[in-house]
Image (cartoon, rainbow, N blue to C red; front, top):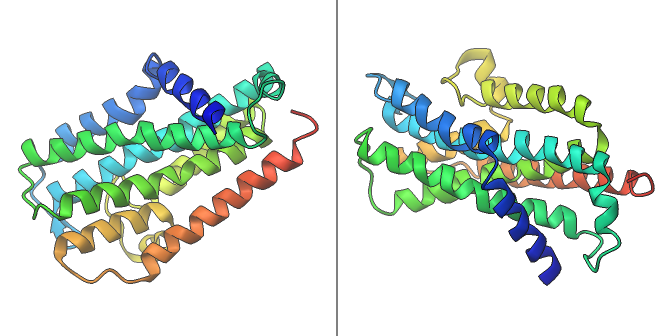
Length: 241
């Protein structure tokens, strides 16, 4: 475990110099909220400022966990970095675990920054207990995408991963209701996606409604699916990586 944590720490330091990574995880959600967040409307039963705060915090964590990780893992596999790590004392699953840890750590700033922005710029006023509930829900619901990033990065070459990651990104973002609230047939489709489930849990919490157990269970199921895909990808490419 110490070797895994050391690798995760080094990766976090390296990401600190990656301007593109922070452009999508920090700058984009903040700019979007500054431009759109103060609309006078409602979405999913809450004020638009509240909805867009939740959705942009989700966007930041989700973007960093999926799009950034998948591309980097594919490139590191191509460059032989993963093969080199196998010559070190790092445990067999240490690389994958370190990526998940890094994702868990690096999504925290984007989630917290947008929530702070919502409070002081969007004038969102919520009971004190709701803020940590929203933060933890968004954090957990977005970091599960790190496992999907591992699956894509291990299984596909860098030039293949980029369009695939973008496709997944758009499907989960649009049908999940991140960019704008959805309704009708799109909402029925989106209800099964983890991005929608995160936003719906959060809006239910804000409304003081009881959260249907199907929503948190759905997130756990998605986590199991993504972890299963990552495990399969790692094992199926073990001899070639």
